[in-house]
Length: 133
Image 1 (spheres, helix red, strand yellow):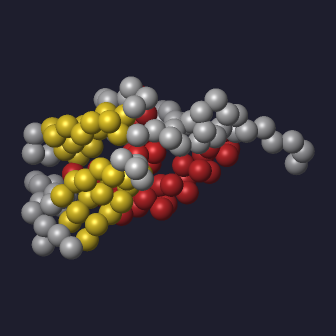
Image 2: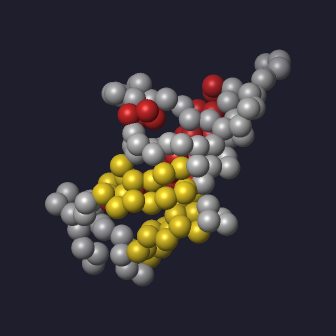
Protein backbone atom coordinates (compact mmCIF):
# COMPACT_ATOMS: atom_id res chain seq x y z
CA UNK A 1 0.00 0.00 0.00
CA UNK A 2 1.31 3.46 -0.88
CA UNK A 3 1.84 6.09 1.81
CA UNK A 4 -1.07 8.48 1.91
CA UNK A 5 -1.76 12.10 2.74
CA UNK A 6 -4.26 13.24 5.34
CA UNK A 7 -7.03 12.91 2.74
CA UNK A 8 -5.90 9.35 1.92
CA UNK A 9 -4.72 10.17 -1.62
CA UNK A 10 -1.78 7.96 -2.58
CA UNK A 11 1.56 9.71 -2.83
CA UNK A 12 3.51 8.77 -5.95
CA UNK A 13 6.65 6.78 -5.24
CA UNK A 14 8.15 8.22 -8.43
CA UNK A 15 7.56 11.08 -10.86
CA UNK A 16 9.36 11.03 -14.21
CA UNK A 17 8.83 13.29 -17.22
CA UNK A 18 9.64 11.79 -20.61
CA UNK A 19 10.41 14.79 -22.84
CA UNK A 20 10.25 13.02 -26.18
CA UNK A 21 6.81 11.49 -25.62
CA UNK A 22 5.64 14.42 -23.43
CA UNK A 23 4.41 12.03 -20.75
CA UNK A 24 4.52 12.50 -17.00
CA UNK A 25 4.84 9.04 -15.48
CA UNK A 26 3.53 8.65 -11.94
CA UNK A 27 4.55 5.49 -10.10
CA UNK A 28 2.50 4.08 -7.25
CA UNK A 29 4.36 1.00 -6.07
CA UNK A 30 4.20 -1.48 -8.95
CA UNK A 31 1.68 0.57 -10.94
CA UNK A 32 2.57 3.36 -13.38
CA UNK A 33 0.26 5.94 -14.93
CA UNK A 34 1.29 8.06 -17.93
CA UNK A 35 -0.34 11.46 -18.27
CA UNK A 36 0.22 13.59 -21.36
CA UNK A 37 1.47 17.13 -20.93
CA UNK A 38 -1.57 18.24 -22.93
CA UNK A 39 -4.03 16.58 -20.53
CA UNK A 40 -2.20 18.05 -17.54
CA UNK A 41 -2.26 21.51 -19.15
CA UNK A 42 -5.92 21.53 -20.16
CA UNK A 43 -6.95 20.21 -16.73
CA UNK A 44 -4.63 22.49 -14.75
CA UNK A 45 -6.08 23.08 -11.28
CA UNK A 46 -5.36 26.81 -11.59
CA UNK A 47 -8.10 29.43 -11.36
CA UNK A 48 -7.11 30.50 -14.89
CA UNK A 49 -8.38 27.13 -16.16
CA UNK A 50 -10.88 26.02 -13.51
CA UNK A 51 -12.47 29.42 -13.04
CA UNK A 52 -13.90 30.47 -9.70
CA UNK A 53 -16.75 28.01 -9.39
CA UNK A 54 -18.71 25.32 -11.15
CA UNK A 55 -19.59 26.38 -14.67
CA UNK A 56 -16.86 29.00 -14.94
CA UNK A 57 -14.20 26.67 -16.36
CA UNK A 58 -12.21 28.10 -19.28
CA UNK A 59 -11.80 25.73 -22.22
CA UNK A 60 -8.14 25.38 -23.17
CA UNK A 61 -7.40 24.80 -26.85
CA UNK A 62 -4.37 24.73 -29.13
CA UNK A 63 -2.38 22.74 -26.58
CA UNK A 64 -1.54 19.61 -28.63
CA UNK A 65 2.21 20.36 -28.62
CA UNK A 66 2.58 21.81 -25.12
CA UNK A 67 5.47 20.46 -23.05
CA UNK A 68 6.49 20.56 -19.43
CA UNK A 69 9.70 22.52 -18.91
CA UNK A 70 10.01 22.32 -15.12
CA UNK A 71 8.53 20.35 -12.23
CA UNK A 72 8.73 21.92 -8.79
CA UNK A 73 7.80 20.22 -5.51
CA UNK A 74 5.28 22.08 -3.34
CA UNK A 75 5.72 21.02 0.27
CA UNK A 76 4.90 17.37 0.83
CA UNK A 77 1.53 17.49 -0.87
CA UNK A 78 1.87 18.56 -4.50
CA UNK A 79 3.92 19.57 -7.53
CA UNK A 80 3.79 22.69 -9.66
CA UNK A 81 4.17 22.18 -13.39
CA UNK A 82 5.68 24.83 -15.65
CA UNK A 83 4.65 24.56 -19.30
CA UNK A 84 6.37 25.97 -22.38
CA UNK A 85 3.34 28.17 -23.13
CA UNK A 86 4.09 30.13 -19.95
CA UNK A 87 1.39 28.56 -17.78
CA UNK A 88 2.73 27.76 -14.31
CA UNK A 89 0.04 28.62 -11.78
CA UNK A 90 -1.46 25.17 -11.24
CA UNK A 91 -0.64 23.31 -8.02
CA UNK A 92 -1.25 19.59 -8.64
CA UNK A 93 -1.98 17.92 -5.29
CA UNK A 94 -1.36 14.19 -4.90
CA UNK A 95 -5.12 13.65 -4.82
CA UNK A 96 -5.70 15.65 -8.00
CA UNK A 97 -2.91 13.81 -9.85
CA UNK A 98 -4.30 10.46 -8.74
CA UNK A 99 -7.77 11.49 -9.95
CA UNK A 100 -6.35 12.55 -13.34
CA UNK A 101 -4.48 9.25 -13.60
CA UNK A 102 -7.55 7.14 -12.81
CA UNK A 103 -10.10 9.15 -14.78
CA UNK A 104 -7.94 10.21 -17.71
CA UNK A 105 -9.93 8.44 -20.45
CA UNK A 106 -13.23 9.98 -19.34
CA UNK A 107 -11.60 13.39 -18.87
CA UNK A 108 -9.97 13.16 -22.29
CA UNK A 109 -13.26 12.19 -23.95
CA UNK A 110 -15.00 15.09 -22.20
CA UNK A 111 -12.27 17.48 -23.35
CA UNK A 112 -12.55 16.37 -26.99
CA UNK A 113 -16.34 16.73 -26.84
CA UNK A 114 -16.06 20.27 -25.41
CA UNK A 115 -13.57 21.23 -28.14
CA UNK A 116 -15.94 19.95 -30.82
CA UNK A 117 -18.93 21.71 -29.27
CA UNK A 118 -17.02 25.02 -29.18
CA UNK A 119 -15.56 24.65 -32.68
CA UNK A 120 -12.02 24.62 -31.30
CA UNK A 121 -8.98 22.48 -32.02
CA UNK A 122 -6.12 20.89 -30.16
CA UNK A 123 -3.84 22.62 -32.68
CA UNK A 124 -2.69 26.23 -32.31
CA UNK A 125 -4.22 28.91 -34.52
CA UNK A 126 -6.90 26.54 -35.78
CA UNK A 127 -10.64 26.90 -35.55
CA UNK A 128 -13.04 24.18 -36.66
CA UNK A 129 -15.92 25.29 -38.86
CA UNK A 130 -18.84 22.92 -39.41
CA UNK A 131 -20.76 23.25 -42.65
CA UNK A 132 -24.26 21.94 -43.11
CA UNK A 133 -26.23 19.89 -40.62
